[in-house]
Image 1 (cartoon, rainbow, N blue to C red):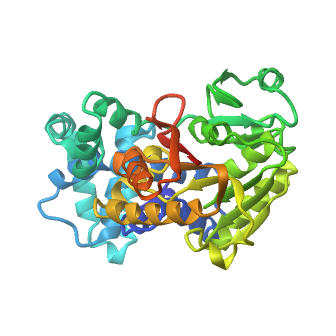
Image 2: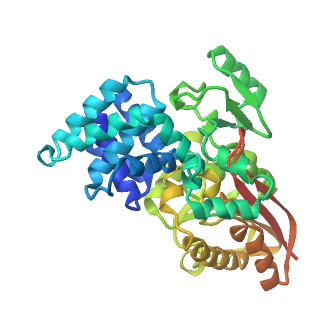
Image 3: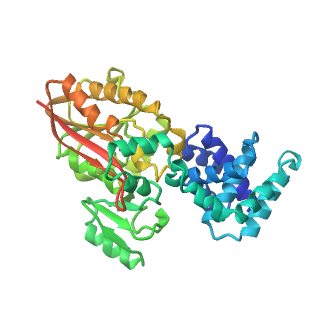
Length: 416
C-alpha cells in the first residue's frame, strides 16, 4: 500500500498544480513499468476518487490542521489517506500505518507525527466533521463555488441533479460498428460472454457493469468501440451520406471520426493540432479497418493545411471547459478557472468562423462541445448567427449528464 499511496500522492500533487490527470497517469505508468495491474488499478481508483471528492476531503483536512501545510507531498498524502478511509474497504489501521510509513520516508520523517495525529483525529471526529461539511457548498457539492454558482444560474430547476450526476462514476458505453453487425447481434454476444448491457439510442449499448476493453466481445476485431452515448449523437446530427466530403476539426482522439466513417463511405479529413493525439485517431482507424486523411494543423488557420475544396459537412468539435464530462475527468473541476471561460469563448468563436468559410453552399456545420455552460453553447451560436447572415440554425440540443450519457451541446447550422 505504501507504493500506491506514494504514487497517488505524487499524481495528485502534479494535477493540482495544473497538469492534466490523463497525461499525468500516462507519465506515471511509463516511469513505473513494474507496477502490477492491481496496483495500477488502485492508483487509478484513488486519484480519480480523491479528485471526484476533493471538495469534501479538502474541507475535512483543513479543519484537522491548525494551519495550512507547506509540504505539498504530505498534504496530498493526507488527502489520499482520507479518501481511503472514507471511500474504500481497506482496513483503517492499515491505511493509517502505511501513510505514517510513507511520511517517515519523506524528508527525514519530520511530519510523521502530524500525519498520524491528523488521520487518527479524523477517525475520532468523523461525524462532527461530516456534519460541519454539509453546511459548506464546496465540500457538500464537491465542486468549486464558482462552478456551483454557474450551474445554479443556468439551470435553476435542475442544478442539484446536474451536480450530483457530475460526482458519480460515469457509465461505460460502447458503440456497435454497424458496418460489421447489428446492435441486437452484439448484445447476444455480450450475453454469451456473461455480461449485461442496456440498449440506448442509435448504436449505443451501456454496460450494466464496466469491464476492461479486452473483455468486450469483438473489441480487438473492431466490432465495438468505447464511446459515451452523448458523443455518439454527433454522427446522427451531422447527417452524412455516401460520397460526401467531410471535415472533422479537432478530431483527436477520433471517436466521432470513426463513427462517421462507420455510417457512410466518406472522403473524410481529420485535423488536430496535436500530432501525438492525432496518432490515436490513426490507431482507432486502423483497428476498425477505416481510412481518413489525418492532418496536423490548427483548425482556426485552415490556409496552412486546406486544399481549397469545400466540404459538404464540417464537425466543429471546439475546445471547451469540458464541464459536461467532469465525472469522467474529475481534475477539470479543480484545475479549471472562471477566467478560462471567456478565453475559451473567444477560441470557440474564432474556430467556428474559420471553419464556416470551408462549408459548401447548402452544406452544414455541426458545432459541438462537451460543456454544460450556456456561454459556450447557445450563446456562442446566437452570436455566430448574428455574424453570418448566410447561416441558419436547423436545431440544437443541450444534453445534461445522467445515468446514460455525459453533458454535450450540439447545434446544426446550414449554409444558405
